[in-house]
Length: 269
Image (cartoon, rainbow, N blue to C red):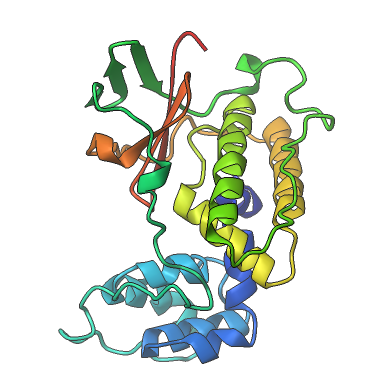
């Protein structure tokens, strides 16, 4: 599996790279480790690192481990992680430039009060939902990897300071994104709603049309899916609580803990 394939599967790396490689990275760095991250990336050694947004979500011990090898190649010293610096990072304010805060997705959660989460299955009175894996191309519907199959998100044209308008747009866009990723057999490699939200703001802040960039990414995913094998799953984690889950439609439920996303699909779909 190529590095480009892993990069594309995240679908969020496009957004994070806008901040990490720009002049604003050092200006927004709040710790010595964040400053070192910016220097490593600016020197071209950030290929194996997570995005700026995801890097800041890790605690300092993990950040230091991530930086050790690329910093060493540049002769840079990784700051020692002390007891005080090892405290979990504080939540970012709503005005933080990179908008990397966790989105309060309570309004996004669907009604699953009468359902039970049982590992790879969600049992509800109306039926069950099974955790979906990535699918080989032979199990996909005809034509889903064709050039004519588009993600089809509309560009955002309202005022981005209007939070209600942004939430409506992103909720609708995310529903379609999940459906299309399942359609092309990549249901096990989807972004969380928080990551989707952050990608939108980061791209739009950088002057990039979110819908157009996502369409381009979807095109690249289809091209790679045609030619490269994909694992059914890349981890064995499972959601721990039904409060992490939301209804996309009658056939699909999505769960996430911000860092990891899980898609459950009705067998009747």
